[in-house]
Length: 228
Length: 224
Image (cartoon, rainbow over all chains, first blue to last red; front, side, top):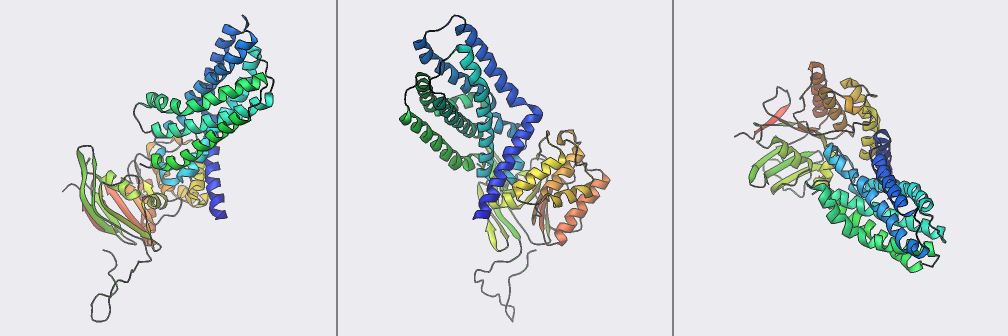
């Protein structure tokens, strides 16, 4: 059993490594996510920054804007994880060679690291540009980590579902946003707590439960979706 | 075509007490598949045993590729049975996907990776050592450090063969296996197929027209 686990993990890590190797050579997702994120950041800071915003408005509005930037940036880049496999016809080779759960895990790890990298770049710039005063940076970091993982997990699963469909763009929006809506609501609320310095143990637990649920659902559904 | 069931003295067939042949065998019966209203496979049957090659021929659209995809576990038939036994175990579709070596024209690899990197990646997925695939590549004379996206169509076909043989499969499913090959490439591929059959492997080869090959044990013509 230990050997099976270690070879499964090796498969997942091989997929993860392959994803990043291809990404560093093409930089498609990095450029797409980065361009989208910084464009919206500039728009937000130009709209709100120089004119200033009151503290109460900042606490209420700015967390929403931050998560909208992260959501749409992720939506611009994460679906390609599976869509590209179908478009370039490498999916057949993967279906024949890869264990479905290991493949899903590798893709999920890639999406998670991509999202966390995006958050690590965007959040400090957003906080600086909007002069957002975060009283609990530790809580903010935890929210970004858990919320970013949830974004990656939900997006990866939906991407696998839509990869073989015709109207991929439309279908991604239809399927992903209802799934990600609970995540966004909790993440925004937690970010407000982090900004205000309020405790948020219960909401953070809800976010972690959401992440766990999406992960389990992904591992259960992916083999069915991948090999119809 | 397959080894006969064991018999006792006098020629009467011995009772089959769950006898499972220890060698790989593939049988498919009454396989049907349609895509919407189009019936592509309308009850196809066949069998192939160790050291044997089943040749599947027919015009374009007769269902050759569809049959191979069903045998490979990539496509579920609407009706019929596919039974592949290896080492005493009957493999389901997932098992056939993992165990079979497949060459098909729509098999593509990662253009951003080199030939070597593609093989090493799929070796890890197959839980095989890359040395065997690299040895096959050396016989097929494919440059290891060339980007897969820069390969010609003939070179891509050589890479497909190396990929299919990576994990030393006992079942080969080959769809137009000599397509785009030059003479040396085709000669090398035929040698690899002959060695595979000589070692007790099985093969199902789909081709629009009959192939000249010395190991054809059965012929299924989907055009009739």
